[in-house]
Amino acid sequence: MDRDTYIELMTFPAEWTEWEMLPFESIRQMVETYEPGMENASEHDRQGAFQWWLKGEPTAAQLVTLARLSWLDPDEGMGGYVRECIAQRPDLSANVAEALASPYHRA
Image (spheres, rainbow, N blue to C red):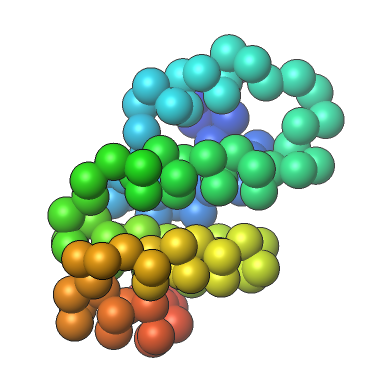
């Protein structure tokens, strides 16, 4: 399976690709371990992409982007959990806090 098919199958919002936020190595591993039926729990893979970023040292701009992506995620509960994880960061800027509090809508 190619990367684009996988991304679509796992219902990653298009903005993950448009905003160049898909972690290449993480997605490569997910594609390699994919088995038919995993799309029924696709939130686990999307959560993995969020956590890949949060385990690193994302910039404030990247955290704003992750917050916006969390609002676009098809699983509202998981998106809320991601926002909670971001909100617990000690380096939370005003811009990030605003992105967490304000639902993001596509233009």
